[in-house]
Image 1: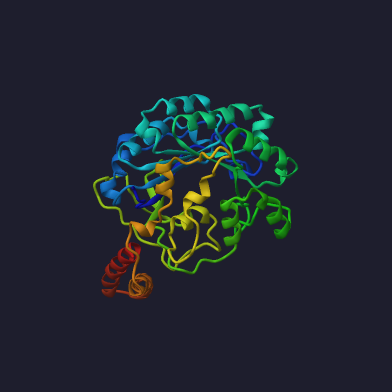
Image 2: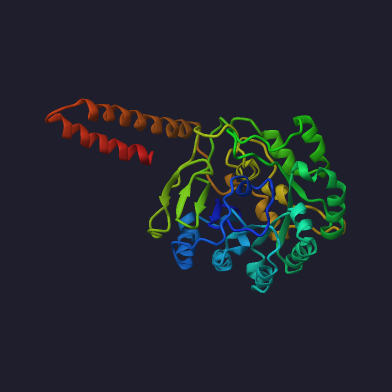
Length: 384
């Protein structure tokens, strides 16, 4: 059985979309673009840069665009290349680009088995544009082709009058209730929940879907994480446009991994230095196990459902894979190792600050001496 070595979130550069959901952060910030942005590097270079030998083993990749992921011209070639290496791929989609789904279901079986389609169930827009039947047809199309899939509904206030209709549609067409995700308002500091309801009313409204995803995200929302986090070492965010890799969504890029794909990747954990007020992508980072001592369901529970006929949304192979944690295939630090990592970074940061002061305060022949030390410790602090 395959065990996940790393979870890597792949951002594909596209903000074009055929829907206009009011709660989408692209809509909120008016970031829609009419065309897909070209990738800086050839697909062959991207795939080679993500080979298992370089990453340490078989990984799980989540591919998502700012707009509709399926509108990317390079998507299928990227998925095929990653799957041929044995990696598992999840694709976030609004489920309406039927032509692209036809291309995916025509791929060889060993590739289809490595794909999980994460359908964003944009019910209001699907109804408005008369695309609901097409959406449901595409869901069943990938299911019949042996792919894994999952339905995720955004917990938007606008949908509340339609909840019974939505539940009936799910049971009738996909055999189980959809999962529910908590929406955030990226326009405000701290990314609060996007709702006008009170916390209690919000919880009561959406818990009727019995979604592990909703329950987990809501339970952890607003909680500052102070444990040692392995994001950056066991997981990462990667831009397919630039090749820049980050420890997580809230960190700066630390390396371009496509520029020299034969060089090692400088994976390095966040540790005790989480910059966020709360882990707003907790249903991914924390369920995969970036904080091993934090008890959470596995990512399998965030996506799978058992249908009324006994079938499941995830294939057995995909279910087994997502039922593992990152610690099952990686070695956690000892307490001493965690402390060493934390204070090693602070040590070099302190040295850097000290020599920066020297740089500004010294004059004459001391200037170049301290300038060289400043450069030396700046380089070390950047690596720490």
